[in-house]
Length: 175
Image 1: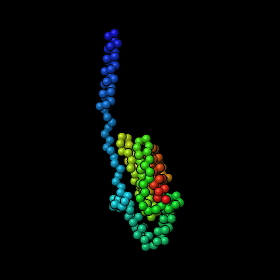
Image 2: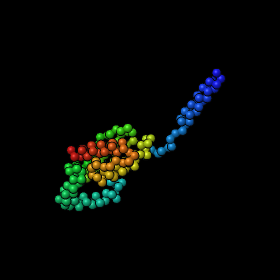
Image 3: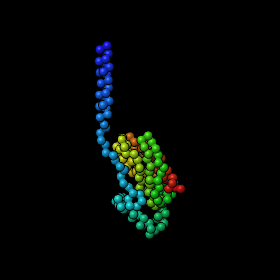
Image 4: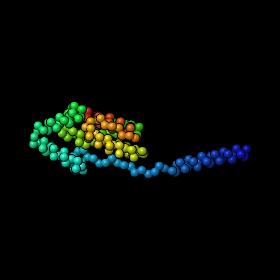
């Protein structure tokens, strides 16, 4: 009887210690990364003038010669899937995955995607996975000029959600 009581007390004490340690030990503090501030409404142009300088030179030259502007749009239309994209800012649908919601916004100038931005979760593991994955996806979007971008390794759900939302934004720009 004493042995069974001692065994039960020992087991309960051990379990309590394990639970206590598990509760007191937390994951390493990971700073919550906010997405980089990209304002697609126009003031973001001031934030990224180096990449915009060639673009701003082309439209100024294009404004002098409207036929070049049409041919430039035609070439971008081919890269965007054969149909013209209307200038403006377009927001894709919010796509939910197992880790949160992702929504993509794109900026179209002269029929080309000039900027992409996204809202995404930045809690728990998403704080370390999403910021670099979204940055890579945004670069791929501007380069590909379509939703045909490669998934980022280690961020499969993020990549899939990003592409679905991006395609919705492109569809809106085509409408």
